Image (cartoon, rainbow, N blue to C red; front, side, top):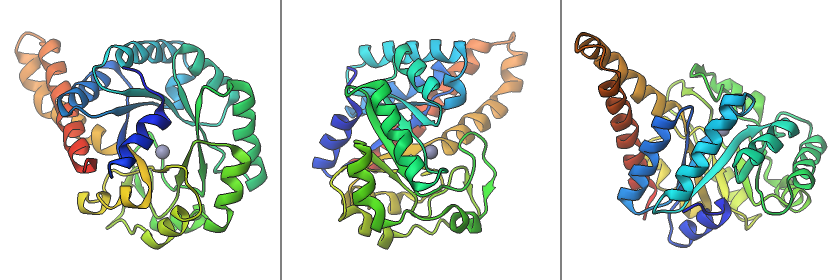
Amino acid sequence: MRTRLDHLVTSALQHGSAVPAFTCYDFTTAMAVVAAAEEAGRGAILLVAPKTAATPNGLRLIGALRGLADAASVPVAVQLDHATDLQVMADAVAAGADSVLADGSALPYEDNIALVRGARSLLGPDVVLEAELGGLAGDEDRAFGADQSGVAVAGLTDSALVEDFVSRTGAELLAVAVGNVHGKYKGEPQLRWDVLQDIAVRTHIPLVLHGASGIPAEELVKAAAMNVGKVNFNTELRTGVLATLQDQLPGHRSDGENLQGLLGHWNSSARTFAAQTLATLTR
Ligand SMILES: [Zn+2]
C-alpha cells in the first residue's frame, strides 16, 4: 500500500529501525525492491533520480512505480530524489510521486531555505518534503571514488543551523552530511557520529543518510539510534546488478538471446541486495 513517506519513517524509528530507499532507474529493480520488502514484511522507499523525472519516459516510470506502490502488501513510498528544479518537482508529483527531496544544499543558506519553501507553496501540504543541509561530495548517478577532501569542501552539516533550518523550511525530513558521500568511498568511510549526534538533539524530525553504499553494516545499524530513519542506497545496488549482468550476459546470449532469463538475474541481484539491506536496518 502506498504510504506517506514521513509516516513510514516515523513508525520504523519508533521500533528502532530505519527504512531503506533505493534508486530505481527502471521497473525491474523496483519490482525486486518491493518483492524483497513484501517478503521481509517491511516498508521500503522507491527513489527516482531527477534526470529520470526530467524526461517524458521518466514520468511514465513514476506512474508505474506509483501503481507498484499502491498494489504492494507493505507500505511503499515514491520519492523524487535530489530535485533542484520546481518544474521537475511539479511534474514528478503530477506523475505520481508523493514525496520530494527539495535539494538546495549546493545553494547559499538562505537560498536553500527559499527553495524548500518554494517547493512547499507549489506542491501543497500533502507532498512530503525532505530538505538537505550541508553538501555531499560525489555524483549520485555515477560512481567515481569521491575524494575525502571533497567532504571538507562540500561541508558537513552545521548543527548550529539545524533548528532554524527545520523550522523555516517546514521540511518533514532532513538529509545530513556527516562524512557520507555519493558514489564510492576512497578508502574507509569516516562517518562523524559526533556531528550526527549533535544534529539529532537539535531537531525532532527524522534524519536521512545519503550515500550509504560502502558504509559497513555494523556502522549502519547505529543510525536509527541517532534518529536516522531513512537511508539511501544507489551505487551498491548498481554494482551488484552490473556485475551479475556482466557475468550472465555471454551465457544468455548463446542461450537463444535469452533476455527474459537475463532480466530474471537482474531481478534476483537487486532483490538479494534489498533483502540484505532491509535486514541490516531492521531491529
Ligand atoms: Zn543522495
